[in-house]
Image (cartoon, rainbow, N blue to C red; front, side, top):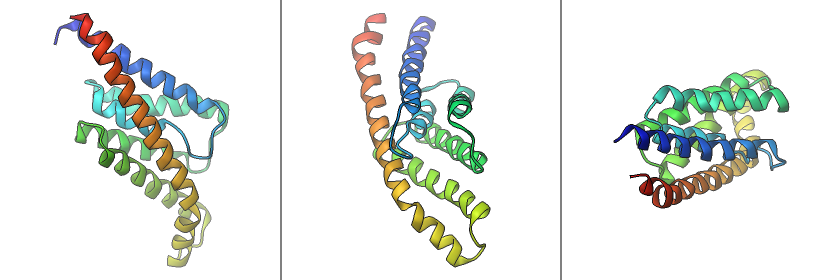
Length: 166
């Protein structure tokens, strides 16, 4: 692939991610955010895999400066790194990729919530995950929505902008 086309492709990928990232700062339902979709999308599309891992973390850190950090921030960031890994390994955005990212985010972050705020019993663990189900619904809906918009946006630019770059 010629260098100028790679550069244009990366600019399109960054532009799509930037628009999605800005949406985290507008009012939204709890957990209806673009970050898992960004991590998956970056993992799939960036040829620079370091960028795929660091960009979601940079977006989170910058937005957390405005929105606030939480006690489970480390677990949240780890979940996004795993989402990037899933994107890198799968190499395509499919329903399975998005579901894998959503479920792994749910499992990792709520494990952190359990460790930091619930009795360390099977009952405490079950209660933690049960009470988190409404947030998982919003997270899954957000991941599906933002992943779909990002994939469609990328295909649009690929068809009408990147192809003309040849």
